Image 1 (cartoon, helix red, strand yellow):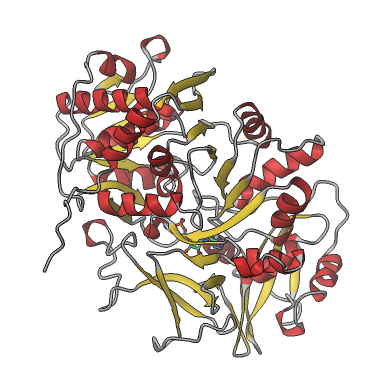
Image 2 (spheres, rainbow, N blue to C red):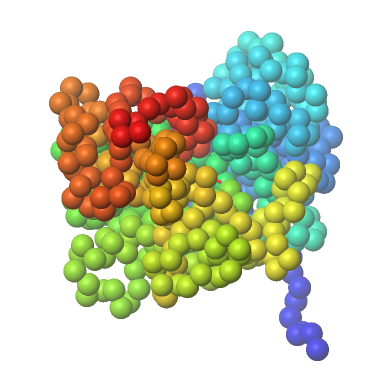
Length: 542
Ligand code: AMP
């Protein structure tokens, strides 16, 4: 017997319609690409998203067509999120930090009919436009006054398109399983693959982002997502913010410590989210200038492991709570969030940090398990580590156009490529990427553990640890680190520091200093490149 409850589809348009009606005056503040701070609100974003849907219809964009964006976090990008998905087309956020040939590949693979661009990326598009075989026109996200000279063909001005429409548009109803947005993985190996989100998965994921034990997004928040809207939908924050009527503060192209800090203070930001690199810059600026955060209550750190020193600084020095979160483009992206449980309230501070250092607990809706090489489930004891598998209503079931073949097993589990532990309370800790663990004498050494410890050494700004072949042990760890400018830290200092916390067999065999480390377009260490760079490296112990 089926229940007798209305089967209203879970659609992204309902989030912005709700925000427009019920939180119409709540502000969306953006550092615009043209220069000044721009202010709008949910009522206007909803209206303008509708005008955009009308304009796209006139440009020939149909239900299911893909619409690309090359844009920073800003109000027009937000309007595109809701306008494109709301009309039943697919919003394809392109990561502008990818190499031009990768952008060509994914825009063609996605068959982007129209590409929206911020002023910043016009030169990039001009250089590749002849290779974009599927794109019929470009829309420059600015007004007539700021339209630049451009060699782009078939180009429109965003504000002019919107001015021609009246906004008398009713968001259409359709199947909630319809594709809503598309995001390509950063592709550390091979071509990027497309993760195709649905309206239903996005709305369910938004509830999780709003849940107190998720990211806790709510109406009293003023949120500054430093995480770009081209990286896993800015971790779902734009949708969750609309659903709760939270103020949004968008940093535009300026993500340096000073710009982010000033915006936080001016706009009463209470919640922020980003990768550790961004927080490194912010904390550096705040420390150097003897500042504090007057309104920030919590910050979400994810994308890479949050180092202990960073969590401690936020909590102990600045009174800002840290939610350490784990996820992937393939998981929408929230998989786990690092909130403490009731029973942890009275623990000593250092033990609380130990828990926060883990990547967090599974949120309701996401199932996790760890398995060994034969796919046997491993114990949830916080010690045994294995391949991390995930399933749930916002986890990918396969890549766009079936790239990569079947990616879930017969029971719906997706292999994350991460290796980790799970404890009895559901806290997960990433030990490594399966390709990055160092296999030494039958034991596994987590490159991430060694990196985190190395970063805690005075004078070390960033560190990467890779496996170097070893005649006796199979593989041994090598630390590749960046020094603070002018700091006298030596190889011996780093090794002595690591001796405090690492077991003897986990200690790296060598430390080398470099001026910079390679990163992926989403800010993660690009270890494939490092392995290539150091492929002929001989360890002193070998
Ligand atoms: P992406 O799809 O580019 O967001 O990359 C997802 C990958 O980032 C995951 O599979 C993890 O390897 C890594 N990752 C994400 N969050 C964390 C975290 N909190 N700690 C460690 N690694 C993380």
